[in-house]
Structure formats: structure tokens, C-alpha cells
Image (cartoon, rainbow, N blue to C red; front, side, top):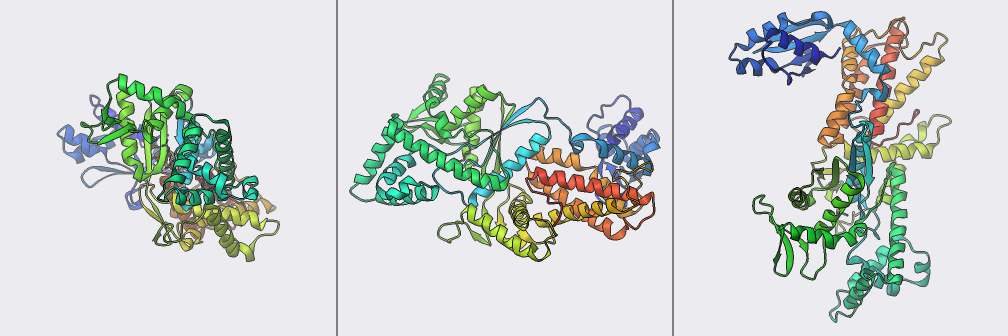
Length: 566
Ligand code: ARG
């Protein structure tokens, strides 16, 4: 029985004329106050000019006590609730039976587009690309778990002046062999060489790059084919990284996809009277919103990032009709998104547009920069993660387990969790020792906790007197304090998933999982499982199985693999 519904109905019985829709029962902040609490009596008492303790006492008088062992009015009118063993057992039983691990399918029939990772083509992904990829993918997984129809869209930076420089560099700065076996690394190399030459004083190289760009923009077949080849090679390389990270996109509509739509977008802005000429450029001014000025057509007639995002939103609304579009980028793009969303509002879009900004990442205490020499390629970082993970597990790999596969699961998991365990909004530091710590808030710690409970369950099944992991006739039976805290916390899993989605913060789920694992560990240390007598034994095993399911599902939502044996 839903506790909020029970308590709400007591409020209504006590004061039939009042509206108590906002009444909530929440987990107690401290177990010494009971299991749950309701803090709403104060607010309503104040509104109704009543003494809050008297108000609360009247609610308690009208409360159906079946689900509670103890009900107390504390302090200035808090309701402290201790649930009955029967209530807990029956909640656990229905949670264990629930599909989707109890996660409400509130997104069913609703569509969202999630725009994340979105690297620039012709460059190798580096350590700076982790956050958008990993946070975006976790949000993607969480929304899918809630039943949303998600379009994961990689908004590649695949158009712009850099392609003039690249085409010129490709033709002049690479060997025949390099051109024949073109890789992203070579593209990056020829870009650097060509860009350096474009800075030469006579301007000859720069003009040649520009000429290549103009040819490309005008649809020259040869340049277009080259451009296409650069993009295909880039996507193949990105996909190699995404495969390691368990990231999959539904579409790769880069900036180029919207290129032809930009003139019409600008025309629409002009027609709506939203854009005006300023120093040769076309701009949107945001006097009311205090957001400065956004250029939508440069003085040379070219379009920019804002124009491209405006064309993109129009196209997404037309093609997918989503209720929401979520953009995951670093927080230096906040002004861009505020301006661009403000323009969308003026144009009358009703789709909810959400920017999820994340803070910068530093590496082992130092800003990530070419100057620091730590602009590490993502490929190298992931290889290092696997190497370090392998060193940790090497001497205790269980028989029959593929050590490379295990090292990948742990290494990639460590890198992802090191990011996901922090609020996206904060700046973070990536540190190997912390990421790979077996104790503490890390990916490997949670993976170990998962594997340990799986091996416990496997062991239980091997016993001659094996019992079903689901409690048999006896059902769930929670007796010890540590066991109860774990059990109550497990019931909060669906709520944690919902909160993570509402806040666009996978860290909410990561925090929840870490707490769960800690509660499990206390339970494990204080309450014997396999050595207990029936029916306690099978009831505890069932709780372990439930813990495994919650932890496994949660890690999956963060995109972290869960080996059964470590
Ligand atoms: N390519 C951009 C960058 O590297 C991110 C694109 C984000 N998505 C968007 N629709 N603007 O910063």
C-alpha cells in the first residue's frame, strides 16, 4: 500500500474541506525518527492557523494504522512513521514481482531527442569528450528505462571552414600512402600542417583553403566526395570508441545535414521581425532577456552555430515531433543555448528544450590542455584503463573468466563511473587511483559488490537444500535493523531513477547505488545468510537477489557492465 495515499487520506478525513494533493511521505532522514516521515502538517497548520502539533495529532487520530508499527508526532508537528513487518514484506514481494524493476513507465508513448557526444569530425576523440558521451548516454538509458521513445542523435561537427583547410592539407601534406590508407590520425595531422601554413604571411595557402571550401559549398563533386570520405572515416573511428563504451546512436545528423535549411530559417526570423541588420550581420537582440545579441548570419553572408541549431530544431520537430529535446554539452555553451532557446520561444516552438551543461574535467589535478601535454586521446585513456584494471584483477581471475573481457568491463566501468558519480554541473578531476579504487565510491567497488552477491546466490543454489531465490511460502521476513534499512532502501530504486531523469543527473542514481551497496555490506556483515535457519535463510537470500537485481539494473542504466564473476 502506498504510504503517501494512506497518510493523505488521514489528512483528508481530519480536515475534509482542505486540498491535500501536495502531501508526501518521504524516507526518514535518520532511522532514529522511524522509517518514513511526513512533514506537511506544519505547512497546512500554518495555512489553517492551527497549532501544528494539534493539527498533526488530529491527522494521527484519523490514520489507518494497519501498515504501521509506530506513529509519532515529533517536534513542531512532524509525523514519524515506522512500518509494520507485514507491510514491508508485502511491499518487497510486489517489488520483486514488478516488471522493469519497478521503474514506472511514465514515458511510454512519449518521444524525446537526446543530442549528445557530438564531436567534431576529422579529429580523434580525446579525454575532453568523455563527459558529453557518458552523461548523455546515461540520460539516454534512463529515459528509455522509463519507457520513453528516445532518438539518440549525434550532432557531429561535420561542416565549416575547417574542411577547406583539410581538403587542401589532404592534397598537399600527405603521402600517397597516407592518402590511400586514410585514418583520422592522418586527417588530424594534415589539418595541423595545413592550418599552420594558412597562417603564413603571403596568404596564398589561406586563399587556396578558402577556394577549396567554396568549391565544397558549391557542391563540387570531387571535394564533396573527399568531404564524405573524411566524415565516413571519422564516424567509423568514433564508432570504435562508442563500441567500447557501450554507446549507440540512432542517427548521426551532423551540422551538414541542416546546411541547406539555413537560408529558410533566417528568412523566417526576418519575416517574424525577430532579426535585424547590425554592422553587416543579421542579429537577434535580447534586450528583455538580457542575453546580449546572437548573430544568425555573419557579415560575409555565412551562417553559424546558432543558425544551424535553429534549422536543426525545426527539422527535429518536423521529423520526430518530440515532447522534449535534451542537449548535453559543456557549460561554456550556456549562453548559446539560452539565446537559441529564447529564439525558439519567440518562433513559437512548444517542444521543451533542455540544456544539460556539465563542468570541465581536469586530469590528475591539471587542466586538460595541449600545453600540459595531457590532451590524452580517448583511445589511449581507455587502453590505459584496461591495462590498469588488468593489473588489479590479474592474480585472482576466477577460472573460466576471460581476463581481457573482465579488464575491459572494469576499466571502462571505472572511467564512466568516475564521471557519472559527480553532479554533471560541477567541474571534476579524473584521478586513476580514485577511479579504480576497490573501496569507496567507484565503479569497480559496485561491480565487485554485484559479482559478490551473484556468487553468493550461485553458492546457495548449489547447496542440496537449495531454495528458490524468491522467498517460498514464508515470503520476505525482515528482522534485523541493518536488513530493514537495506530493504527500505531497495524500495526507493524506482524513485531514484525518476529523480535522476527529472534532474537530468545520472549522479542521483549513482549516489543511490553506492548507498545501496553500503547498506548491503552492513547487512552482510551483521546478518548471517547461508548459515541461517529456514525460513530466515531463504528470505535473506531473496533480499540478496533483490539487491543484485537493483544494483545490476542501476549499473546498466549508467552503461556499466556487470560481470557475474570477478
Ligand atoms: N559539436 C559541438 C561541440 O563539439 C557540440 C554540439 C552540441 N549539439 C548541438 N545541437 N549544438 O562543441
